[in-house]
Length: 97
Image 1: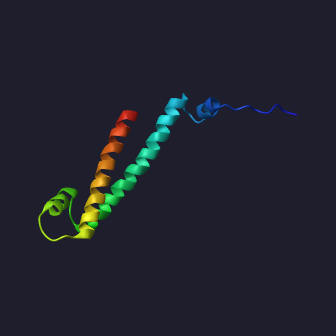
Image 2 (image 1 turned 30 degrees about the horizontal axis):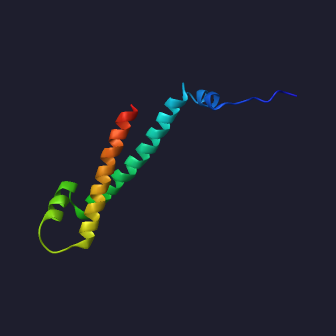
Image 3 (image 1 turned 90 degrees about the horizontal axis):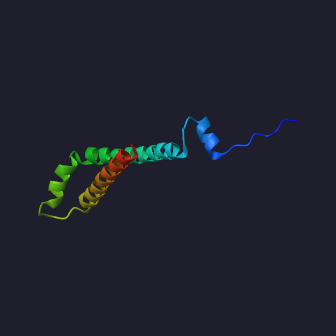
C-alpha cells in the first residue's frame, strides 16, 4: 500500500505555477477585477447604443433645464456610476501591478 500524498496550500499553488501565495492572490484579484471591468464596460456600451450619445453628451443633456425625463435621469445616474466604478477598478488594477 502506498503512502498518501500530503498537500499544503503552498504546494498546490506551487504546482499551479505560483511562486508564493501573494502572487496567487494578486492573480485571482486581477481576474475578479477584469471580470467586473468587462461588465461595466458592456453596460456603458449598451447605454451609448441606447441613447446614441457619449457619457459627456448625456451629462450635458442631463444638466440642461427643461422637462423631466425619468428614464434619461435613471440611465444617466447608472452610466455615471458605471464610469466611476471603471475608474476605481483601473486604479485597483494598477495597485496590483
